[in-house]
Length: 292
Ligand SMILES: [Ca+2]
Ligand SMILES: [Ca+2]
Image (cartoon, rainbow, N blue to C red; front, top):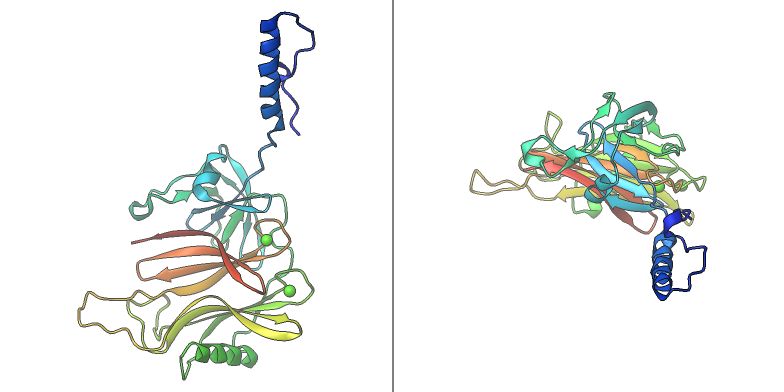
């Protein structure tokens, strides 16, 4: 509890005058309100390094949106930088300010120095956001190719062409069992990125495989699936499908459980979202987006 500043605390000397008593009464009431207020929780801001976008912050287990978080981020702060599998040192981050890009002037940004290419997320917090090792597995492993194929079939893609981009193994919830994240995208394109229109049987997804009561279960973290090609008579018409990519797996609120950070891109923009993956549900915690 905060110490009472002297002048807000009850007067020590007894006054006999009614006015003095009244003043004492109000001071005492004021003291009650002033001193009962809990100290402001410390905000731990989270920034996407490559864009500088401020997701928001965490404070005592709560997730706070960027606009609100920015109000209590006044001076320069020290951030820890994290890539997909490693900690990448520290950076200094200034006060959040609106993005200079026209299309996302409503997005708040923090400029970080340095901001290495490999860094994905910056977090200003005293705990280690990478408490357990994130392992990158060989993406051609049959077990996971089969798992991805089976999952795509449940989404109505009859003959899936499985194209796994990344497989990560990490114990998200610190229960001693490792979970596996499978990131797969196929828009039948030569280049990376998302097309304007989705072909038949195309998809992009992030799956989570985990043991639940001794059985492996597959959960969808994020994804979209197109059984039919997107067709429209007008040339200007398109459906702008997304590609999804895991960029980090970190404990961003300090509860010991790691969240999954997924970046999505469509042909004219993108978003990055932090997900909490409990066995029963996947929850979106904070997100930043910029696009047309
Ligand atoms: Ca686990
Ligand atoms: Ca966490």
